Length: 459
Image (tube, rainbow, N blue to C red; front, side, top):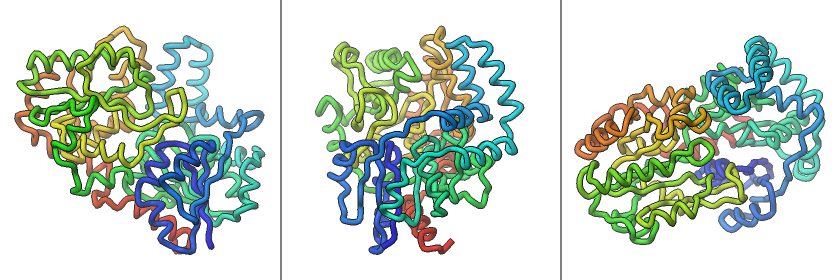
């Protein structure tokens, strides 16, 4: 029996691995078992209710404390990270903290030292000097043959990779998001192989993370696999599920708004009110209604909901903690509801968001708001600033996302798309081709097969 270690510390890891065909494909080999690492017993019980198999084992690992050399190298992964998006984020922090010495000294040092030779040296020192034995007991207990880390930028996965590499055990990383190689930080340790969604992410890994091309495998986006099926609810079935129950009218045109969330914007409720006003006053034409889909990693202000008894909204998933962030999960019902929302809507309105790609897969027009409701906000709360980020700039170049620079332009393009939903279809097709890479609905299976090939020394 061969053993594979897999991390599911975050909801996005479960979404890409457990709720695609990736793990299912791995377990088709009867001689393989999987040990999942997660944060606490509550999560173990949560996942076991859906994913239970004699060859699926769950272990709880608390986040290791970060101190001493470990703390220094964790700091360096941000300080040496040199990308256009990283520069933008530093400017956002500087605008709030006004720490001139830290900002300017850090910028100079980043320009001097944020280069391949220095990064490679720091990674080597990090690997040899930092001592963390958090995972050693699990390696002794299970003797794994392969380790898969699905959130490479965080410390728990870094220490798991370090332990595996010191024991000469094969390692694979899954780049679980399109933005992290250019926006998050440097990888402290590079696994033997890295699975990515598309060639854009592959290029970012090569150019910004200094990962050799031979280590990178392009598999597609597993979380999008279900979109390429033809299995959808009827329109009547879908509208009965809108919150409040049966609140939607299937005879009306449905416009979905996806807010940024409280971390990145103070304008969400202003935009919701603006869209409602336009809909009620028939600026979008007759018989339209707005459905607001809040992000799964954020909290909804119930007081704001109460002020708007007319609001149709979706609060997807569940949160494991009382803080916004990574402690969330979307189950199969949530994902099915999202797929049908995209299928039955007429268009989507949002700021910079991956849901623009989701909508394009279902060939639905995508409008991104490029004007400020609160122009005096700092950059970190100014949602239009995020269009400057490297990963999203590439998406905009496809022509599949329509930027609108004013409320008047927003009205103009909503009317245009409602009357001609095929408008910009070619751009959307290009966006899907570039971001998904594969449109066969088998990316999860590809990931699982790639893991098995490495497990069996077939690569």
